[in-house]
Every structure is written in C-alpha cells, then in structure tokens.
Image 1 (cartoon, helix red, strand yellow):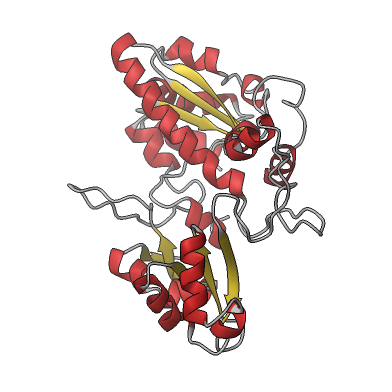
Image 2 (cartoon, helix red, strand yellow):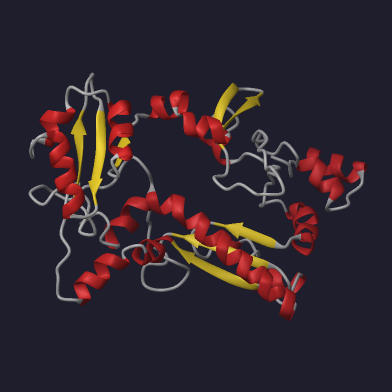
Length: 323
C-alpha cells in the first residue's frame, strides 16, 4: 500500500497501526486502545467485527462512552446486509443509475466519481458529531449503522417527490427539470466546452439575444471558453468552463488562491499535489501531512497509548504481532 497514490491521498494526517489480529497477543494493544478511543470507524462486511470480538457490545463493555460507526453498502441488518456490494450496485438499486444518461439511450453507471463512497463519510462524520454531543449529556456512546445504499436513496429525494406526485422520473441527459434550459456547448480548440444554465425563460431569451438566435452551439464554438464564461457571467447567466483534470489541478486560479491543493512530500512517491479538506476554519488553518506507511506507528502507539514497555514491544515484534 505504501507506494500506491490512492493510499497516499486517502490516508493523509493519520497514524498507522497494523496488527495480526489472529495473534492473541494483539489484544494487549487493542484493549487499551478501546478504553482510550472516542470513536471507532469500520467498514468490514457485517459480522466481521463480531468474529474478531470487536463488535459494539464488546467495545462498550470496556468503554461505555465509545461511539462506533459501521459503514457498509446495505447496512448491518436486513435481507441484503451480507450480500456483496459496491458503489455501483448501491447506485443501481437507488435509481441513480436508471436516471443517469439520455432518454433514448441505456442507463449509465456514473464512472467519474464513486458517488456513494464519497458522500457516505461526510454523512458519517456529521452523525459522529451528533453522537458525541449526546454523549456529553448522557455519558453513553452508541453504534451508528451507515448504509451507503440508504444515503444514496436519500439523495434521490427530488425523484421520489416526483414519483409521489404522479410524474415518472426519466433520464434527462444534460437537462434538469429544476431549470429552464441547460447544456454543454463546444468552444474554440480541441475538446473545449462550456456549461450554460438558464434558470428561466427570461435568461434563455437573453442568451439567444447574445447568440443572435437559438443556435447557441454555433455561437459558442469559435469562442474561447474562459472569455465566454466571463462574458456570460457578467450578463447574469450561469456558465462555467468544462475543465479536464489537468486544467483543474494545474491552472485553476480559484483553487490556487484558496490553497485547496497542497504539496505533500512522500518518501516513496516524492512531492505530489493533494486536495485538502474542502472546509476552512476562521480561527485555525488545518494543513494535512503525508500519509503514513502501513504500520509505521505501531510501536509508538503500543508505547504511548497502550503503555507497553520497550521489552514487551520487542517481544510482540518477534512474535509477529506488528505487520
């Protein structure tokens, strides 16, 4: 894992402890960690933590205030709980796949971003904050069951409302029922595009006036995308350059100005750009640091948190407890 870019991006600002849980001696480190921890997050298949003796009841017996979050595709209970699933299957069941694409074509699995995988951690973090606030009042933790499928369903609320109103939701391509007209139009240069949204008929008429008619694509095609975006924005029409990833990472002035992309120096990967947490605090500036190597802090955690002696840590190392 240490030399994998995805691991380096997903695990910044963490310490890494890797143990062989098949070794009984691993509990000498795990049990003190349970007593020390505020929150435990896991996304094993439902039932795995119980097999390890680390389910919520076992943790709460040692630390009644602990908050445990179990993230899975279909939740910890129900007929699908133990079925194999990934973001694509959760999205398919939630109708997200059915509603993605064009009316005259087959449904599309959104491939650019694993939507469920991305949004679930934010929902989990918000729920943890609520659980910790409750713990301040009661002294008790709780077990949070986070289902990616159900979170994806929750994001389909507009489609659900339409269905309940007797309107069958269908694929709309680039159109959005909440807006009068929106689409992506070609611009000057190879594979250059601009996205334009008209919230109402008045904005559409204004766009057509600028374009000299309804052939908006013919009007945009010879124009430079950035300059056209600025012109449309000045006219009160929402528009944005369709950037590719290189544009976003290397040339986006807004991200650069806000410090959204930071350089991290990794011992194996070298210096690389990383997208920091997309939230800024007024009193503190949160800066990420590089991801650890797998198990890099095992002995440090064993000493500082588990309170083991150097001699005992050495014995556990020889026994193969640290991975």
